[in-house]
Amino acid sequence: DIQMTQSPASLSASLGETVSIECLASEGISNDLAWYQQKSGKSPQLLIYTTNRLQDGVPSRFSGSGSGTRYSLKISGMQPEDEADYFCQQSYKYPLTFGSGTKLEIK
Amino acid sequence: EVQLVESGGGLVQPGRSLKLSCAASGFTFSTSYMAWVRQAPKKGLEWVATISTSGLTTYYPDSVRGRFTISRDNARSSLYLQMNSLKSEDTATYYCARHGARVDFAYWGQGTLVTVSS
Image 1 (cartoon, rainbow over the protein chains, first blue to last red):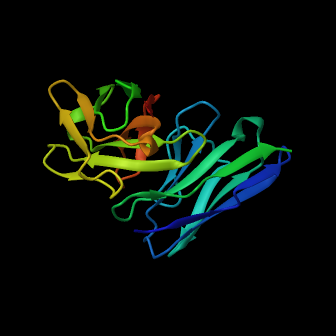
Image 2 (image 1 turned 45 degrees about the horizontal axis):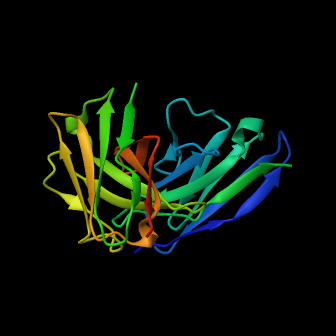
């Protein structure tokens, strides 16, 4: 199985700050990497797929990058509504696996 | 608008069975791969099962293979998850999800809570 190691587990950011979250896959996943946002008490929502493609309706301050085994999500200019849990997921092969999540809070 | 509405969750004793349902609307169900994903209380996300458009091909992680069965009824735009031999570690909110083009989870339902306890 492909292990997804996500870091950091938590972080706090000031409004307007740029933040990054990383995921490290245990083997190459050929850019088949998605990012999800889950607000408190809500279902997860797809933000980014195939490493860097924004899902419809997702603000452009969200961006993704990476290759091989290392991938990252960047939020350029933290907004109050960005406070949430974030998860990465590899869609390269079964079993599909998620990172353990990052809790992003406003400082 | 894509809508996925789960039902069938509840409290069940260890070793017993439960069947979840998901009613889909707002898209062409019969041409979409579908999945179940679960989330234990205060924990991360775990993929549970995926089914192809025809229903002929299914995928499971080792943690549920042989105990859970995913199925679909394209005429009713409905997805199901039959869960047998339930364990306490199956306690979670179960989400119905529609796969995107790259086997990501493009749309999610609101979830249904399954609690396995005596």
